Image (cartoon, rainbow, N blue to C red; front, side, top):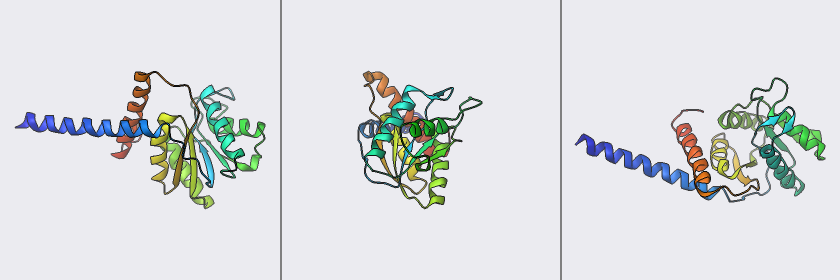
Length: 192
């Protein structure tokens, strides 16, 4: 009897994981951008004050949305990631202001060490500012989880994945599966 119950439990867990992974795959290519209070750019690596190619692509996408007047502000996220001088959020702000965004239109969240930590900080910042909606910009595979974490902070969230080169089949699904694991763990109270 016990082996059957274990097999059933394993099948249910596998089905749940597959369901979340498939939802992440579907969300990854959907651009929901529409007018909102702020555009939130999820952090990525920076190199001694310069955005990495991934962060630059996210920032450029957010800049395009801002130029379309979809939001009056851009919020950049991300902590130091081991850099003693720069944070991802501050590097994002510097990049955007160099591209013509007025400094007062850029909000910085410089503490986030993870997606969950950044979402918590963003939720608090936006609550204090009386802002209720955002467009979240990240890589396609990351949008589902980022959206859910921000929505858990009471925000109306629209996903807008940055343009990216298409990953090969198994590599793409590995990214989806990794995000599914992170989302499921967060759903049961494990913050990574």
